[in-house]
Image (cartoon, rainbow, N blue to C red; front, top):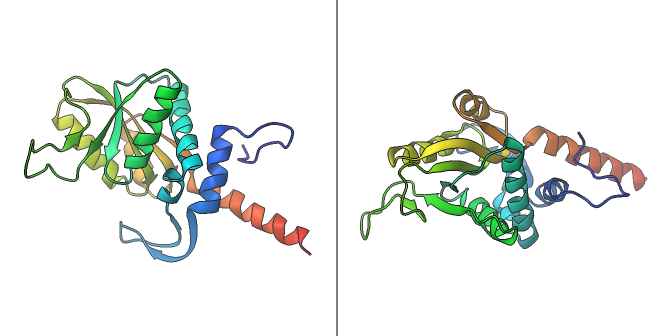
Length: 205
């Protein structure tokens, strides 16, 4: 289904978020990803998830995806820092919608001082049913780190969500073990962006 809305109706939260991601977060060029792979585009999702409107649409899209999956978690969180704005957006919108959802963040490693915690924002972890989120899924490595951390603390991971799936192996690995979904695939965002650029070019001729 196209990400473009019909002109006769308001755009959905997903369509609004797609528009913002295409406009703000897709960067063309030669990039080396965290995985070491080369790519001719880069998804800088924080330019969208840390934008006021982008954060709002991100929160709604995550909650709507949870509804589609028929998931009612005790908490939602992910590995800092890609997941940070996604988690914050989701929990704020959950409060606006009168369906409050606890958030948490997972550090790369436990603090060496204070309470020496690795999971922030969730006091009681044993038996909690949680959803792990991230902004982009490439190899799935950062998502797995978060999953392993919360599992060690006694949580049950009932779903995994990323805003964008680059379809480069990570989502397949996660889907084989967990209830994984993404809001978008990179392909559909890139295809719509290309179509938009082509249409704009034609209209200016």
